[in-house]
Image (cartoon, rainbow, N blue to C red; front, side, top):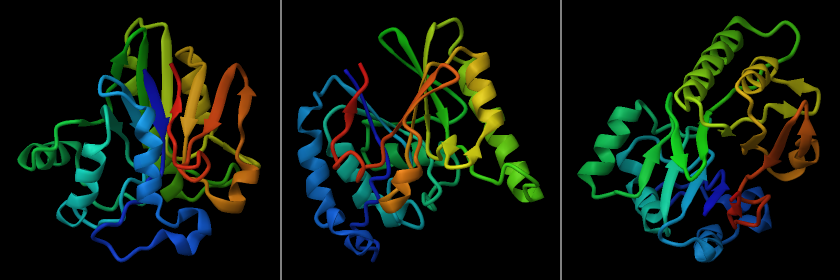
Length: 228
C-alpha cells in the first residue's frame, strides 16, 4: 500500500513544542505513532516535508530515528522548515552512518510503487503578479526540479506528485508547476504546509484534470491517508 502525510514537525531535541500552535498538537508524536498503526512493514509512506525542527543533521537524529522506527519505507521531501537539509547526498550519508535504513529522499528523482511513479519537489509560493526576483528564481528552480522528477518516471502512465507548498491556495496559483504536471499527464497531487485557520483557503478537489489534497499532519489528525 501507498500512504502519505506531511508536516510531522518533530522536536525531540529542539525546544519547539507544537501545542502552542493549537491543542490538537499536544502529544502529537504519540498521535503519529498511533496513526501509523495501519501501515504495514511492506508499505510506503511519502512524507511531504517539514519533518523536524532540528537546525542540522545531528540535532535531529532523535527525530529521524523516530521516523525510521515507524512501520514501512518512508520517502521524504524537503519543506520550508527543514533547516537541517543541505544536500541529499549528505543526508543519505548521515542516515547510513546512523543505521537509518527505511528513509529515502525524493529530490530530482522519482520512485516506483506498483504501477505508479512517485514524483515531487518542495515547491514555492510567491505572488501571482510582480513576484520579487528572489521568489521568481526559487520558483523557476522548483519547476525545473519537478520536471526532472517527472522526466525520470519515463513512460509510467500513473504519475503522482508530492509537494510541500500548495500549488493552489486562495488567490495564489503556481502556474508553472501546474503546467508541468499537465504536460506530464499528472492526475494526483498531494501537498502540506498549511495549518490551522489557513486550511480554509487550501484547495482540495479537481482543477484542470488534477486532483489535489492537503495532507498536513494536523489536517489528517496525524494519521496517514492511503492512496493505493
